[in-house]
Length: 639
Image (tube, rainbow, N blue to C red; front, side):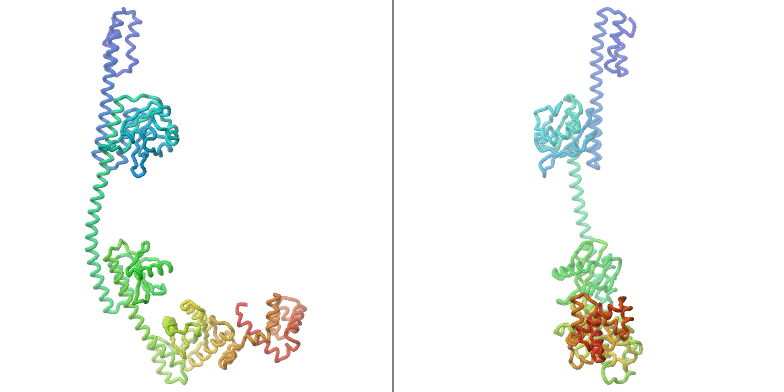
């Protein structure tokens, strides 16, 4: 008998860890060699023993692998940094150690009362990865509810579980057949389920169930450790935050004291708005915008966008109501008030969050701003009185001591020998109350002084002297800007330019006549100069002084039928009359100007004769008609 036909060969197979099928080789060789039956029986017995030894070695090797995997898992827990990484490692080891196609883990959701997919390994179905199971539904829901391991070799056909369309659909899409699920326990509580699953039928041995239970215990420990770490971190963060709050409060108190001293010094030495803004931003950081009651910028330090007017109004109203600064998005608003009067607002964009003491700094800055604005107003009012008295003296008659007037003007920065225009503001600028009249005068004083001019109240009317030569433009600008302030249409008549003190009184009188003429022409709420109204302005101004302002009656009596005819029929008789008179009564030139045939002009003038009477071209009537046409044009300047 050769060595190859002896039991020693089985030892060699064991030594090289041969596959189980190779252990049939010696028996096959022995039968081929014709060994007797007793020798074949001996070899058969040796093969059985060798296979038993091989199985034992395989189990021990597998157990060693499992223990190594459990040891690695324990090591992961010891160095736990990220819970997701640890859970993924546990699920992956479960899949490798049990040799399954898929492994996954679900965790219980205490708020919703169900269990949801937390980690998967080997899964290919998005629907499966999003599954949520009600307690008691499916294999996993039953494990989560009872805290007992469950195993099935064919899930879809196993009637022990409560099947649902959603769960069966997800399991079917993933292609799972055999499933093992074990609970994740923390004390007496079940927090989730760990699974191993195959896409083909297979039994799960008791050792595999025990291994998965061990991995599940590690996963539960990992989850609990992560929870404890999170609670510890949160407690440390709270302690750190409390310590930071104490330090920040102490620092803010010191900043508030320093800011108080600095702003007190600003008030004492007469600092300006830029100084206040710089002091606030130096203490609090960030950028600050100071606005007046109309939303105009008083000062700005740092990069900060001006908020919308509506946002400013709402925030300032809230600040006044609460008596504190208020936050809107990244900005803080503090109302600047004096009693019940709104003077403006401070808008701060801080670099860091503001604590209470920081808000007090901003509010104190708003108080200082109110004091500065009131002081500035007092100074401005005093200067306004000086400037107003000068203008009143300039437009008074008779004029006294022009050299003294020039000297007074130079002291406040006004050159009386430069061209100026005079603008008279109508009574429609203010209501009957004295406060409204004073408000208009205050606006006019500021408006004029910022342009190097003067403003005053004269005989109950507000008048402005502005540098420049465009009287009509100045009148329209005053009418427009003052209308926005008062909320009602304002009329402004202007005259000029005038040079030298001696001519200002005459120019003012012309501006008043222009204002009167605008009222007579029905152009209230507009601005114009005497030059723009021409002789009609002078004429109506004089008439207005006499008290006769029936311009509408004059127009109706003179050209009313023609105007009405155009309005009803959509014709151009008024335009034809203007062209006819404008070319000196030439039919041909009028036709050329109107781009029509001469016969058309003739026919239109015949219609005018029917409407006004045959004598409309006589000198006396023609003069009245031309004046009426001019008045009509001035009353409707956009036509």
